[in-house]
Length: 156
Image 1 (tube, rainbow, N blue to C red):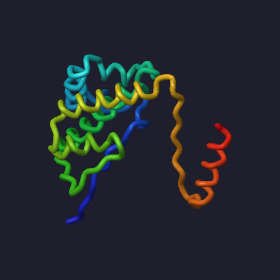
Image 2: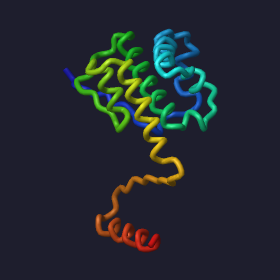
Image 3: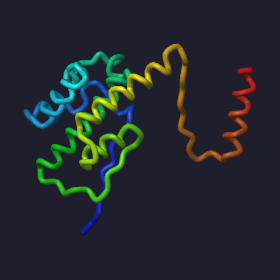
């Protein structure tokens, strides 16, 4: 038997119209999962991911519950189609919550509450504080450290 893992995405994988092909096939698993999530956060998540506005979908408090809900929907769909159970589940950042829900470690309703609060707090700490994150891949450690020193000295 071949082992396989499911990796759930983090924040940044959202876009207007995501999962549209599943909704147009009249699949109730997706609609029901989004309806369930919408009740917990008091916003129509399905309408948000299908119609936007984009600036609202990109707010952490909505982005994070939308991605969690999308991931759980896909997993539920997978199970409904008699997909094999993964040997491992993991997630990138926010995706860890999806992995926890899909592995039955926490309830979806609890994860929604936690993730919605997480997104709200992330927004609060960045208000009027410009932030930026970059991934550094394949560059020597010394060059990265030197670049950071240059940027830091320019700010002083």
